[in-house]
Length: 91
Image (tube, rainbow, N blue to C red; front, side, top):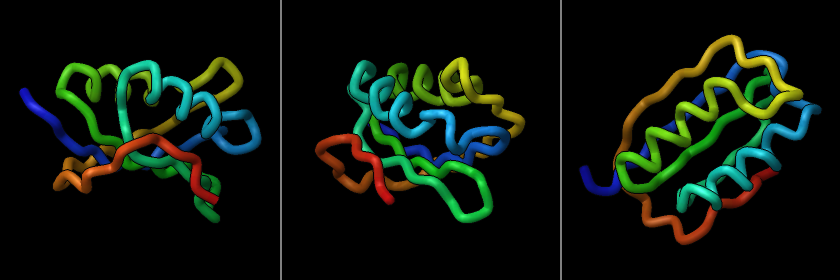
């Protein structure tokens, strides 16, 4: 499958519940690089790059999130690789 990039928009009760921190940990576990940040409208945005199966597992995890979150919608748009080297939390 090769490396791919996904741009995610996660909606629901996803801010103030440690979503970004848990997302960073899951990304590192799955060898995903990119970033995650809160959006002013209450959603969380992430850009993730990784091998196909690892990226699919990351996206599947984002559909549920950590136990403290309640995801109601997940939008995914595939994009061009940016060459990230780590996964970070952006402010």
